[in-house]
Amino acid sequence: MSYYVKLFVVISGITVLSACTTNFSLPRGIPFNEVNQDEAIEKGDSHTTDNNDSIDENQINSEEIEETEIDREFLLESHFFNEVKVVNGNQVIENPSNIMAMVNKEYGLEDDYVPKDLVIPEVDFSFGDADIPQSYLRKDAATALEKLFKLAKEDNIELLAVSGYRSFFRQQGIFNVEKGNKGEEKALQAVALPGQSEHQTGLAMDVTSRSVNLEITKEFGETKEGKWVSENAHKAGFIIRYPLGKESITGYQYEPWHLRYVGLEQAKVIYENKLTLEEYFQKAKKI
Image (cartoon, rainbow, N blue to C red; front, top):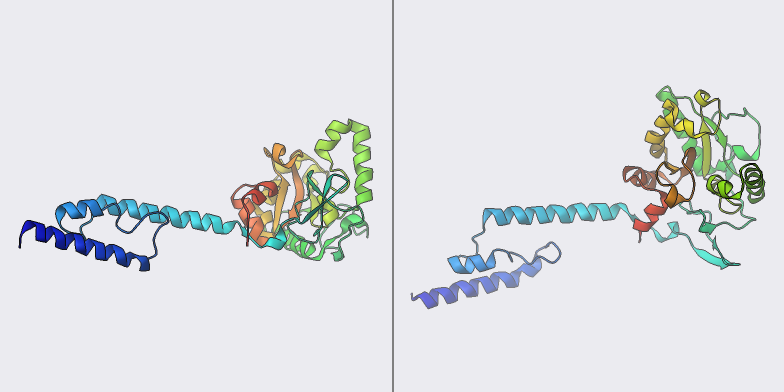
């Protein structure tokens, strides 16, 4: 067989092989055997591959799989995103019962919003057994808090709950006191305006310990109890809502005591990726 006939046979074989690749699952943008076809034609063997090229393809496949797994972490059903309407220039959340509702300085709640499923979790409170509004949480969050306190007890950690649900008007009073004591600028860094407080959602609880005299203080984060909470809150579906070093993102100072319920799956992703709720929603994709 002449050289040109052999070359024609080889090229025809490669063309047939390429046409069959549509039935394979390929990495995006990388045709089957693309890196080896020119070399195969020169050698007259469409099945010859270089070992180094095979390693490169494996690495590409690995990167594609890893990227897909990371993206999957941030797939979130559409009802978990804020639905917003503009009222007097303010963005007001229309689906506040959503457990992932992102309440902050940009998105707020109606002044008359009160969760319908508030209950008192069976945990120890810093003020004892008094039946007062701040002892309440939404049912799912209350159950999760009970789980968190149980996990803590198993590790010989004593936690006490301090402040859960707050109404719009209760938050107004707290802000006014802080403003009177420290001035408006500092008050805005430490206390949410009414309607912008997570406590109104019934999904947030402040916690403390005897090691800081049952106070709400950033020193709690340096105690064994505070460190335990930081490392384990996600196991019950909570996140540290205002972490250290993320003040420019959350808009608030570091609060190691402020726990926010978001659900087990989302809490795990936020914890493992060291995100704030704002950063999580920047990555989240609706499904």
